Length: 112
Ligand SMILES: C[C@H](O)[C@H](O)[C@H]1CNC2=NC(N)=NC(=O)C2=N1
Image (cartoon, rainbow, N blue to C red; front, side, top):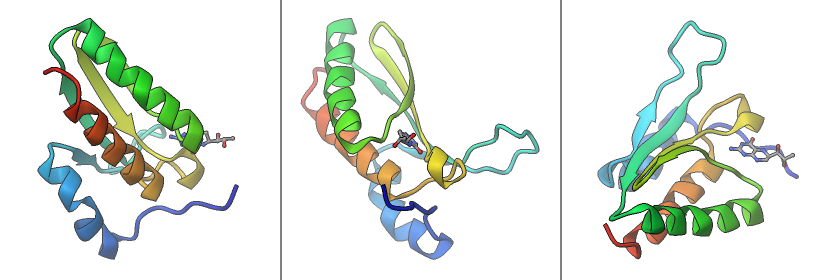
């Protein structure tokens, strides 16, 4: 596995623009707590649990294939997602951008 680095400040605005426009937030690592993470976050809403879990299943298969996994929380039709790269010191990397982009594709085919 090749080394992965955080997105450079200079490339953030361009690379993240489509995701921010789709409702993703960039959580900064500006806290004094040791567990603070820079992360991409979004809460998805679906029509019911079946649609939410269908989304999660498709994401899980893609995540395992890419060896890059989401932190997430599900209640019925809601899926809260946090994407960060542990291997890049809990910063946002290209791997998070790629997984978030796949999530947008998958979510667009589930019933809302
Ligand atoms: C050993 C394995 O490749 C690593 O632990 C992978 C697994 N999944 C991962 N997922 C995420 N989100 N960040 C990582 O740094 C990461 N690293």
